[in-house]
Length: 430
Image (cartoon, rainbow, N blue to C red; front, side):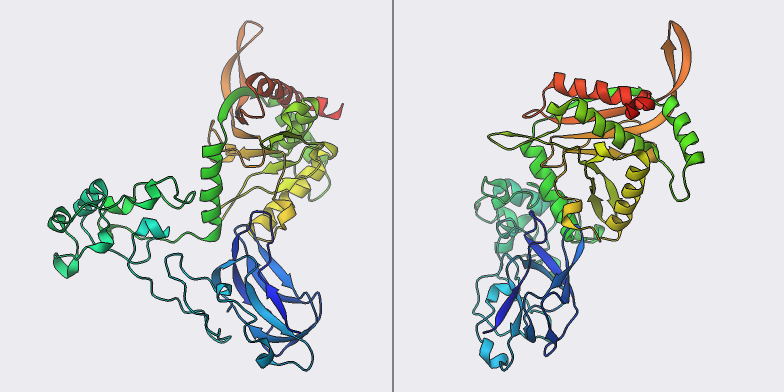
């Protein structure tokens, strides 16, 4: 009996992905565990293995296809003696994604040699479909009036040059319903309430479609900002002693190990969470999850976005081990080769922009975590010590806290512990 190969869910948050490459072709024999395809998610490129042995009888989704839904059929494996005629109807029409604005169509037999052909969508309000399915040419003034009057530009016939919708076309039209994105039923992060295109001439900008990573960042950060009540706590840390110890340790370290300031901060945050365990939590609706280990995420900028690989059980690791692991995670993150378990979850994150000359900033919490630490640069400042003016290298850190899980006093207690470890690094050995 033929076996369907489904689009796998490679992480708990994955809803769709891009089938970037087939490693096999129709007619190839495969065994269970053989790599047959590469799937690109919003964060990484993963390999897909065959779930059974047999012959690749049909490739349903062509390589390069985007927005393939999880659990959609992407190929079919036939057992010995079976052929393509035995698998009619094995793959539903939803295996190949179509635009959200397209109406349901009758299933068509997919061709393995060509990419899916999208059915032209009828003119519908752009907001109602979740995205603009057809370019509508209108003057900025016409767009603004249409937005104010609740008129759907897609229903109008333009009388301007080349069919462009002008002010007179909108003023003579009857008001309609407001766009769906302005209603409560609009999908989260489907787009801004006010479409920026309405304020610019069509030839004054280049429109770059969002890739999977940027879509996920937009959706998750919108959700975080809307659902998590953030509050912020800042503290200054003197890092002269840390810089001295870092220099000495790097001189004595074995080849290939070079400690960064961020390695010390990861270690300090991990130990501070051990010292203040009530801050090592996640909010779970009807309960708080008290984490047993300090799993520290480190924000890494990559092409087109941001990813936060996690150093697991950081409280049990020394500076050299943290440094080596952090470099490995960052390299594989930039190559999109991380496994889901290497960037999903975690209990705390650090985002460091000091190397870019940033003095201080606030960061958005990365769910399901309840806190993130934004780190600025170390800079010499005038300080008062024992009643005398002095100069010290100071670094400002700002902690974003989920007020549902961490209160002000608790967050402050954590920062005090963190500051102690940073300002006197030998205390990390106790």
